[in-house]
Length: 255
Length: 255
DNA sequence: TTTGCATTCTTTGTATACAAACGCATAATC
DNA sequence: GATTATGCGTTTGTATACAAAGAATGCAAA
Image: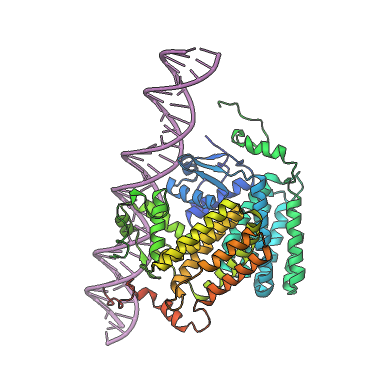
């Protein structure tokens, strides 16, 4: 049985988990966080019953959370075969980044136009939290907060469909970063985030868009997507063999 | 009890409904079609039990279909209060059109680059069906097919996140057109669709993008979003009183 | 030894029973 | 007569039982 989720607080009803609210929100947030922190490796099977036991809820709730994660392409839902953690390919990663460039440009332009002082303050606060997470070595939280910054920016832009699309793109990007980011160099995006806020506050569209595009460049230059992806492809091909351990060996073929 | 869905084929298991596949796909397609054809007016409550009875499936299936429709903002899901057909406001419509312009431009550029001869043939076939629907007066099917054309174009562009976003935008646009399109002039988009295919086949990016942008202009110029929206706002405000009849009077206040 | 088939077992898919929340109506009080 | 409290009915939210589809295992035959 899969034990990788047990470190999570078991009596979930207390309402921790970064996101308050309903049970499926909590389950969703926990699973997503576990994926980002690589406690759940790509390809890992997510059994409904096991998850239900771990979180102390019925399969109904788990199913909703998985369905939501599937809609954001963070897990793959195979009919009659259950859910697995998604293993985005290099090509899929490229498509996500293409869409993100398009969306981030639009969001930046709208944010320059519409962001309020209060929203800018909240954004600054988020960047500080992001920096703190990285400085205390919490990579999973850092990646998540970095994503939440971009989502908050989308909210400041004030276009509902764009916010919803951005949510999905950010989730996928986080998974891609967790899977492909080279070396152990930290993500370090908080500095660029701060500059971006400054440009938006100054209502300087050109500067803001330019910073955002460079930010996008930096993010994917840190990834190992650059054609020398043989080892990564191999990893993806055999990911169903990797039994979740962070850097332990492969489990014996028959358990 | 709401009778507006009964005209739909009752033994759904036979697998009609434009979309083959699983039960929730069928239920989803039927409800969506009913909304487009305005057999279900904005604001109409969608009771899980009633729908389950109509389609001969359990609330589990209905719930999934409603959840999907909610994710595409075609129905509104209020916690503990059930689902209602969405009533997009003028502002929401504007936001959808903003996003669509952005997405359609990107899709057109990618389609010029990637569309295969086979895909172009399929697109032409879809436009013919769209024209036939309008010429025989089937407005609901016409709006739906027009939407499916744009979705197919997104598939030809070959970017997965973009396809998924486009699906949601097209659904919302269809609802907006059904709700706001002025007069009874038919939608008449098939001509522009054909020209667009020609430009894509000729690999003429500038011409294709230009046609697409004009197409977008035409679509929203046909809508009554232009500030004189008092009557439309009124309609939205009182939509919970309109008891689904196509142009019959309002139901007595106590049913 | 290996391959194909049948049986068993596990896991997902669907329906339904039960609990909780909400809205409406009635009634009582100010 | 208006307003608030309370009870009832309806509808949604959650858990669970049952059905069905896959995967795994063991056996038999080549």
